[in-house]
Amino acid sequence: MLSSEPLVIVLIGPTASGKTELAIEIAQYFKINIHNIDSRQIYRGMDIGTAKPTIEQQRQIKHLLIDIQNPNKRINVKEFQEIATRSINNEIKQNKSPFLVGGSGLYMNSITKGFVTPNVPPQEFLRKKLLTLGQEYCWQLLKVCDPLTTKKINCEDKTRTIRALEVFYATGQPMSLQQSVNPPPWNVIELGIDREDLNQRIERRAQFMFHNGLIEETKYIISKYGENIPLLKTIGYEEANLTIKNIYSMSKAVEITVNKTINFAKRQRTWFRNKNNPFWLDNKNPLKDAIIKIESLLN
Image (cartoon, rainbow, N blue to C red; front, side, top):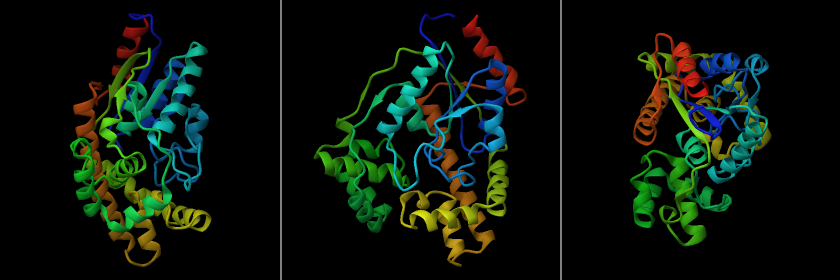
């Protein structure tokens, strides 16, 4: 290896770009496990709407950091960072190269770049109040409380807006003044995958989800945890819930989910290009390209 530090392999890319399938092929070639770095796949029962690796895919390769909490108990970035870092270091102790795969840029960078964030537990009562105020009002409120943070997140990002307000009201200080960086002692190689036909991939996946169990999955989550949990406000589940209530037709729900996902993918692409510097893989043969780049660091 070119470095004495342990090699940690990272695969990032926007939603629906084919990370899961490619990651399994890479993991099989190098005989390593996959660490899931996704802000929603960590929750039990949220399978179809998060495009979680199927049972068959999980049989092919061991996936870590999947199904670690119930969806009514949120895990914040700080908590996930600690859980994931322990899991990664455990792999390193076994002389394995940890393989991190996901599209959640904030979660990924908190681990690989060592972002230290305020350890403020969820303030459920405050979150419910903020959600009732609406995203536009919360965004304007955050501009007053923490203008630096509003420059780092998208104005439509409900989760991070509410989290920043939560930290401010819990600590009395803006989140932007409580963050620091402490990189872990790893040699990180970042691989990126993107697709020219991403919009078509997103549409196909949304159609598949709604016609293959997303409605039923959403009904189950509501029956078990209630319909007021924040995760049911995320893309796909919110539209499925409105379909259950007969507010949306199936086709309307799919259309809105596709549009929201395309906009989300645009934000992911912007994040990865501005905050990461991956080796972008050749779309004609991404597996071969990934193997060559990884082996250049292993030899």
